[in-house]
Length: 174
Image (cartoon, rainbow, N blue to C red; front, side):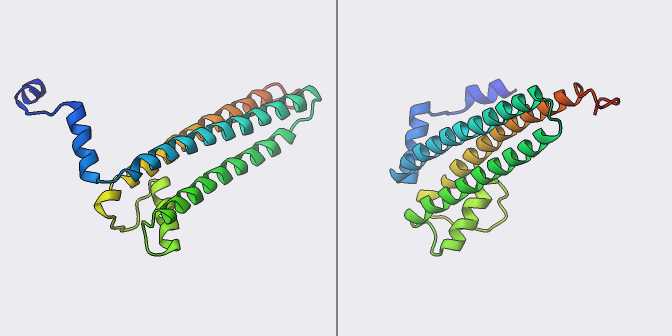
């Protein structure tokens, strides 16, 4: 059934499809925004790797010295640093939108950036046709950044839970 629909459909080539979208946007600045999103994701990935790497380094040192419980403090600090990195990215998106004069006021720009980055989508924002794709770009960057952060926190939590079973002072394994 689906194959019949696809065979009978008058589908454009991929290059034609992308060209039509690019023409519809009428905005070369959007490609600069895409590059900025890629750079932000790269920087976020490096920051999260550094945070997780530092956590694992501290965790290993504490385990070697048989200091139990202190690694939970380092985990808490790592989570706070990751949250701060996300807030910094929301601020970066807000500044990009201010520079591009997307909205009339700075608070409206900040709320827009935060809602799109977190994919909440609560607000009712009307964008000009040239910026209709901007929420997609911001939300994708937020989704991928949160995914990277989640993977790092999962790795750190796994290290913490693995140590709880090794603690000789604990008879229940926790």
